[in-house]
Length: 71
Image (cartoon, rainbow, N blue to C red; front, side, top):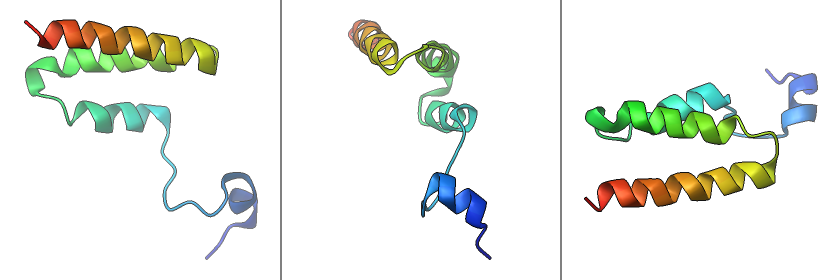
């Protein structure tokens, strides 16, 4: 069964997930002792008001994680 309204907005995608589920799924890929930090970092990225700000926050988080894992 195809819902024409949904398909007209989302297109023919295999699966569409919300940001919360994406964050949860990504956190599951991280070691349990780092999941809280991961969820917090992802949350900060998704809270940005623009794509440019989100990309800047992603870069900031990536650098912080690199420093954290280099210990």
